[in-house]
Amino acid sequence: MVIVDVFIAFTKIISIHCHAGSTPGSQYQYEYPPYYSGTKLNESHLENANIKYIRQLREKFNHWVENFSSVLRSRNYKKTSFSQCCAASNGKPFSFDDGTMRSLHFDHKMMQSAMWIDAPNELAFGYTRCMMGFLLFNQNPKQILVLGLGGGSLVKYCYQYLPQSNITAVEIDPNVIALRKHFLIPSDDHRLQIIQMDAAKFVTQTEQLFDVILLDGFDADGLVADLSTKKFYMDCKQKLSSNGILVSNLWGDSFDISSIIAQKCLIFNNSVLWCRSIDSYNIISFSFQSLSFTFDHQLKSIAKILSQRFHLELVQIAYRLITSAKFLKELTSSLFSRKHHRQIHSQDIFNEIDEMLRAHDDVPKTRSEWVALNKNFNE
Image (tube, rainbow, N blue to C red; front, top):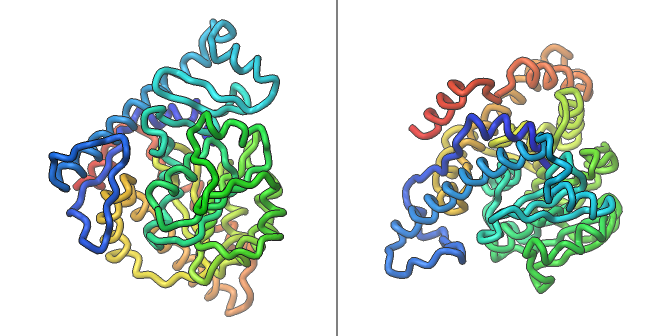
């Protein structure tokens, strides 16, 4: 879920880059997207062609969202085809086609999902690409649980790029599932199952353990309250495998987000990382069942290889996760010392994280800051 006007503030001043590193080693099996056929090219040329193609798609997407937002703000909005489509939906989720783009909406305020009609399996919004940051820690998850279907962006991407994974998606709204074919979500098979059920109940009742849980639970009002409670996060932890990861898409002010991250720090024994989205104010948190990692060198090396393989900005994501890892390590060490080895409470962690998000916001505010940031990542 992205609020269109806020997304525009980013797309007007940023150009998204894919990072082309060295060719992946033989231990990584590269899979080419189905929309590109270049059988006469060698592997290196084919990879570069696909990276260039996806970069162009994302640049076009930025322009499309900007134009879409200007239509929503126009004086003639009520005469637009989108306004008419929204009115005809009678309060139900609806899809809207605009040129080569198809988007999912619950109302006229927020865009829940978007896809390129000619490249439906690629991830348009940066927050979804950020959620795939779990690949830095596990490139071969056997069981993936997606909570909140939306337009199926995460489901489709995982289905194509992770052929060894079994995917279960849970969506409470049958009207969202009814749009499945509109968003070209594959039919259920031995690898994919979409279930209409309350996500909180499903997590409580299922006996399956998952290597990755992707939590993207939003309704027309924002984050679903029942999917943001201490009990729910504890239930999710119990359904993770021994090396499982809970990935959450968070939206709100620093107070709300800090409260959620602080809760997770206690539940997951401080094995929590987070970062800003690539192109919006969404924050993505990664909560680990167990985490032992050399964050600087090892994570950066993995990110350079995987960025090509998965067509994601994993280098940027890795740098941001390293920042949060260092912050949390220093925070817990400082709190433990100040508390004289007494128990640390969520309020202690919350205060520090809230201050960090307010005072050390890593989202650039000006064009020059964005240019400087992108230049550093591309060097």
